[in-house]
Structures are given as structure tokens and as C-alpha cells.
Image (cartoon, rainbow, N blue to C red):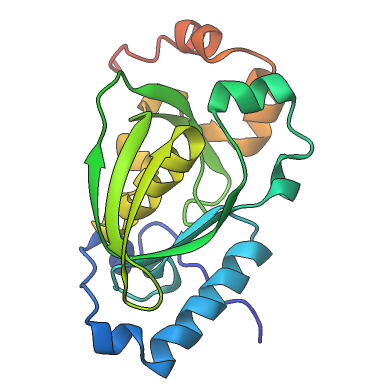
Length: 201
């Protein structure tokens, strides 16, 4: 089947709170099929996470996967900086998130629903998530680094929050311009050059 359409910023479904799913709904053929199609849509994009509101469904459901092949062309030192390692496919339903102690990390983030745009987003370095999996069974996830960032990003979607709502506005840029002007610089260099903590005039 063709990938599902990923809706873009401005669509009302991205700006409202998604509703929780019951156990009977989770086990239904409709939700099981939706999970499978979300996985294929995420991989086709490609992305490392996809929340149900992004495909027009206001449900407390997201899929996450950071495949090893996505990291093959990333320098080892950058992977270490991001604390990024492969994350196997998993499903979170009706998640509750707790941010773990520790200062926030600032890294560039994009979103499949804000196509072509990046910006520096502060996120907690570690999170604890309690949720249900695709079988309706309780799961607990302790995540750090990039996995924690993905979970925060996707769970934000379920509350109607986009990464652009959390970005330092002075760092918002196109992916093309990031690659041309900023990709070789450190986060601290970018932060200082853009005076990212300075409010607009």
C-alpha cells in the first residue's frame, strides 16, 4: 500500500490534544493496520518517529525507530555528541513522560510535518516513559540522548506541540541553508553567531 499522507503545520489536527486509546481499540484490526502503515510511512519518509496526528489521526499513538543504516554516513564523533545509537522499532500508546534531572541539550531538530525546516531545540537529556505497546501491554522506557529527544518530539505531537514551538526562533532555517552555512560548525559556534538567546528586535 502507498505511504500515508503526512500533514503539514497549519493543519488543525497538529495543534490539538490527541485522545487516548482503549485496550479494545488497540487490539482492533483498524489500529493494528494503522500501526503497520505508520511504520511503513515513517520508513518511506524516512524518519525516526511518527505520531498519529501527523497522518491526520488525533490518537495517542506514535511509532519510533532509529535504524542503523540512518547512522552509517554520520561521523562517529557526531554520533557520540548526540548520544545516538540504533533504536529498534517500538510503539507508544497513551504515553506519560517524566523528564530526568540534568541540564537541557541543544541540537537541531526537524519534523516531517514542518518539511524542510530545522532549528535548535532544547530537550532533556534523559526521560522515563510509561506507555502501552501495540498489544496494549504496559511498558516502561528509560531513554537518553537522541532516543530521549525522539520520544519528547513524538509525545509533544500528541499534545499538539510542534518542534517549532520549542525552537530558538533565531536558529530557524531551511535544511539547505543549514548544510551550506552551518553544518560544519559546532552548536556553540552557531549559538554565538546567531545570538540565539537574544530576543528579536
